[in-house]
Image (cartoon, rainbow, N blue to C red; front, top):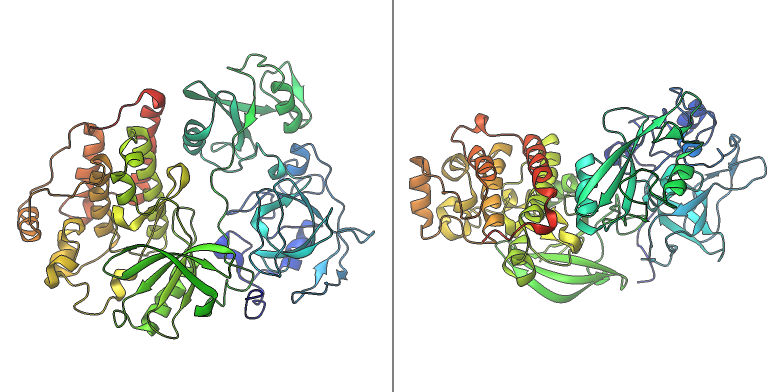
Length: 553
């Protein structure tokens, strides 16, 4: 294949991916701002979803100094209302000039990107790009300043050169607990990041790793816009503050040495025209290595378009209605969260049906826990993985979506213990007899809430029950739940009130979370949102002893 098949998708509705509100025209937003407006931002300059920082013209709408000034950059001039032409090659949409000189807005690459099609543009982190066309929210047309090459780029891989997000140390709206986890997981002495304050809008915090703990410093701001940590020393912008404390500690726990490396790149589609038209030709895929098999079919490591590593799930012929799957897949495609496996594309024109998703390097969480590397994981790391799963499930909960088969085998692992929930919704589509409680072994009795196993009453609360079993799998490094009991015995005993005892080495407070997930009454079980913050709090208590924490055995 020379490139991506199909036509350029129509102007998208960005609301699902953190873009502008439904029905609001991009041009109207720009007019309201009086200048350039990246569609990933609100009109008051706050970040939305997975976007970056918007360069402001002087003051933001709410009176705060724009992020461009906070970063130490100069706000770009207001673009005229006229339109600039596109360029040859991929189908072009109108682009908007940046100034009266006709120059385009300059952006900085935040990550490396290797072209996936002949219409794409490869770039390296730190390279400068001219944006020629940004009318599609997820994929823009750009030109490399140095090489002059043109092509499509993922819009969430770049940021305006004068913006705060272009700084390698700025992490945006990351939670305090997330900052601690990332700094403790991959950072070193002196690793740091700057983030937006959770408690005070428009303020910032510095998170700095000191040996085996993380210190947080609130960055104060005077009325004239200058920043400080110590009131006696002020700086015109955050970049100047960071530069200053990178030369010596000046009262901090240590000197700022190195910005924390970004662990996860933002999620993107396969290419610019698979976002909405995602039935792809079967011949564009190559199956390379069989990774496993289960009740749905086989899972393969593969390659799309000879460029992009993917995971390919081949469904058993006759196991699922193609029409029903397409309806469900349309919903699954819109579910975007860093802790959910991203659905890229499908092949449904003939059987077996192919489901194409992102590829995770370490396979299923269950397999990972049972291998030597996973067997050496310590309690804080296990808690981190549990928190990631809870985060993905909290997103499904917010979108009224039920997984139905949450278990360690359906969570996938990548580098740095990144975990993502997979196979959400597929069990509901299996034809009668393939995934039914009456069929015994095909039905995951030991993970299923009693009301779901006995009466097929699945809900997000039955998913919560399954999450409690997943916690057991984590702290036992992938052991089978209810050891020594048959499925029939589990059904009978659980209905009578039996619950698995606390495993050796499992903290009582963590076991209590499991017991809360296994409450008989569905309404008494916690939400995934509350499970997420309880696990985050638990991690905070354990995180200070991160390097000394023992393996739970």
